[in-house]
Amino acid sequence: MSDYFPRIADAELADRLRWIGAVLIDGPKGCGKTETASRLAKSVVRLDTDAGARALVGLNPGSLFDQEAPILFDEWQRVPEIWDQVRRHVDDLRQRGLYILTGSATPTDARELHSGAGRIGTLRMRPMSLSESGHSTGEVSLAALMAGEEQRAKRTEVTVPELLERIVIGGWPALLGEDERSARRWLADYLSQIVEVDVPSLGTTRRAPQRLRRALASLGRNVGQPIKLTDLAADIGGEGVRPADETVHAYLDALDRLKLTDDSPSWRPHMRSRTQLREAPTRYFVDPSLGTAALGVGSKDLLADLNAAGFHFEALVVRDLRIYAQPLGGTISTWREVRGRKEVDAIVETPNAWAAFEVKLTGDERVIDDAARRLIDFAAEIDTRRHGTPSALVVVTATGGAGKRADGVHVVPITALGP
Image (cartoon, rainbow, N blue to C red):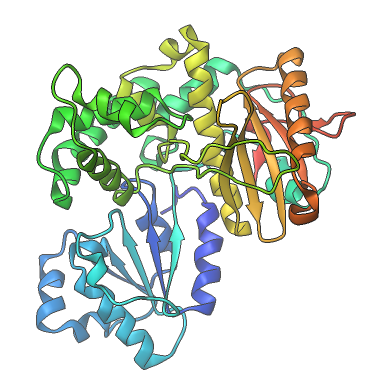
């Protein structure tokens, strides 16, 4: 563990263990759940690799709990019965910080499990943000922005081509220090495992690897957009028969259960005008690298198509905003007018504040000026008597320095943003 990179989730897990009996850490395979949990666990039960431990769940489950706490039950979904055993032990012992469960998929029979409310808290983990992987200075704090504080940072040295490489490589701990070529091979194998093994193992769809690959590619092409299910179905069908709506829903459900997608719901605030807003969620993968891997493109391809690159850059920014907002109790939504003429890429809401973010893959002042005007116009439409005034209006860029403009809008490069 000497090469462990500290995670924002470290403090979140420690905090949860102080006030609840057990904590479930869920997230996609390879995002670092086990490593983070192992930092605090005193005992580890690996249910994915230890056949003996799996057998004991049915034969003598009490022996698995006769260890020093906190006990980590890794990949708990392999033996869903452990959930009720953990819940029962928390009830009986009435202590805090007893157990940690990690899982990369919601089990098929999850509906049959008893609720863990009040006994088992949930912590979502994602691949690493730029500040966690060391690619952001973190000089600008999202928490400070949400508190209405002015934030500044020196001009960052990261170039647009380097940022595009970070999109393609992603925030996977296993890829820290790897070059783009190696990362793309790892991600190709990762998606093959998802298509060939993980999705079929959930039992929600019949084995159709080519259709699953087309579904992933369609989500990659439409990242950062509210793609309609009819359009997604047409992409999945290819030149063949379009799949039924139930099949499309099953694919999306499987990807959600594997924690591979991370969509932004539509924000529908009280407004001064009668603007009609979209209700469809905006589609994102849990890490931007999955979108480019599904399309088979690299950083040079993105550099040759900056319009498409802008959407993948937005996915990178939204991933980091989710990670930074989570310790604040924050959520991420998107705001779009029905006809698509007005939109805001991300709305961050915490229990007592909200802020709006526009994302631009540029340092061009004219583009930033236009984005700032759009944010100001958007904020003027919100009924502040019901929602309060925004804590911050922010244009997130790829390059440049960070500061607050004369019109009150913050400009922040993603490589300076942190929790």
